[in-house]
Length: 188
Image (cartoon, rainbow, N blue to C red; front, top):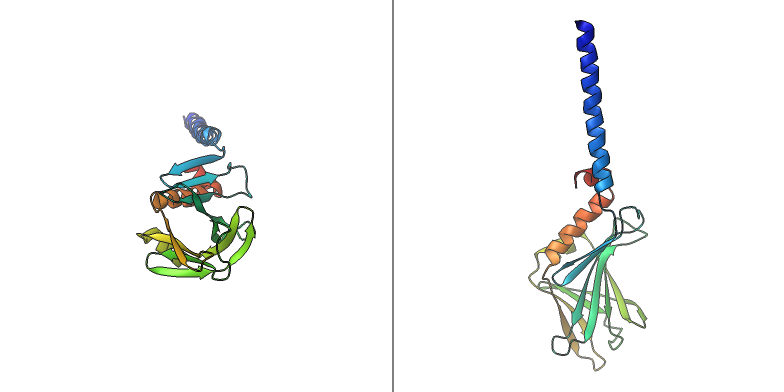
């Protein structure tokens, strides 16, 4: 009698382990690891495939003149390739801005001025390091904008749409955590 109970217990244990292994394998195989681009109103989220360990997700938004539809600026947010724990915002504005005053980034009532790093054929580029305080301010902000100085010396404010930003940044954070953690990937 005792031998039969032992054999039954072993068989049940093997069955349970097999079911768990099959479930984990099925979840891993069914998981779609392809690169993705998702749109959240005025923001786009692009993530590389889960197999790309060096890549990271990026969030982008374009700023256009509402009257003419002319492209005025682009904002791209993500992590630095050489510092994966450091998030940055890269802003590209037209070549017709004055370089010396730099770029003003307005988040709510606060304005932070950063210098332009370089100018390329597509525009002048400024990089803003995003610390936790700045990210929290962006998450809670009712308004965001960029301030550039035109060739005539006048400051011009470019409004940045926050429509879809909260959902997009939340998804970016979740996607990055999932991409770098097998445990989160298992449960997603």
